[in-house]
Length: 236
Image (tube, rainbow, N blue to C red; front, side, top):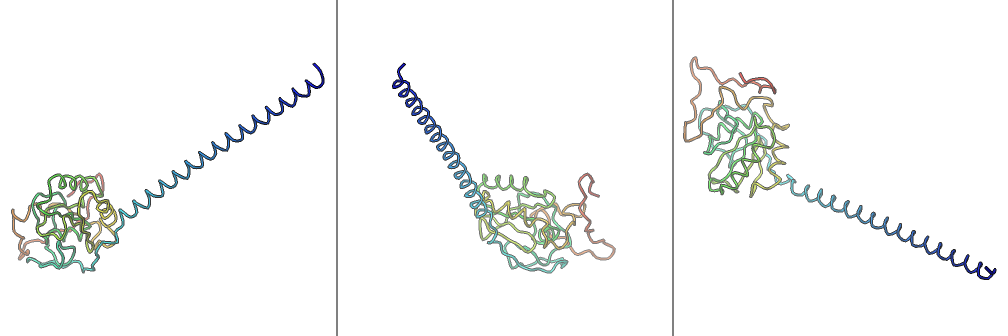
């Protein structure tokens, strides 16, 4: 091989190596660029989801009112809000449960005083939505402090209440429903935290099944407001 041919061959190999390095650098840049784009897209998607979720669960629409606790009365009470979310109430509280018929306001408010959340809905709410509400009520928060019942003449299809707090909703799929339960059930404004929402003195009937009980007189004993049992204990 002549010197000229050898020199030309070396130059050709150098050019090939340089071209190969350029291709490798370009491939690396494309790979890192694509990876960076994917990271940016993921961050954007996660950020969008978090912002949207925060908006969906925003509780700025909650109405809050201060009420004095411990005001027990035997008579029917006229409340300012529909449904009520605090104020005077009956000596007896409503057993926390899901009811198919309206319950006495005066019993429900007493349960709110103990830390319950009360989900109310219009009686003409479609059955599918009532079933959705039931699913939320039985899967969110503390079941020992959950009330659910129909309520005539509500200002919106669904209203969820705790002691001193209330939120109107248009449907059971609204994420604000679960957000309300998680924030206000046995929340810091609960007048009697830890008091049971059940027990032998709790009312288990609906408004059409029994009238408000009269005030205890003579030797009759007032209902005992005991602490709710801890997990593993049975209610006495």
